[in-house]
Image (cartoon, rainbow, N blue to C red):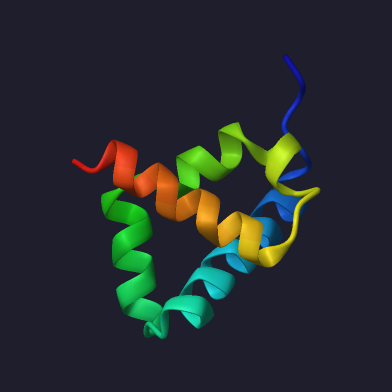
Length: 73
């Protein structure tokens, strides 16, 4: 198991992921945040940081969409 990145790097990456998701889906900040919190997307990003941080924006957004579809509360 790999170690988590420094907290500031992880936070910056979570913001990047949410901003990317928001832009692709045409959402407001509060709407994107609600989706991420409701579906525990921030936890998912943390657990998959090693893989996700080395991919592109569209891959990340598609991966988050798939995660939400497969893990909706």
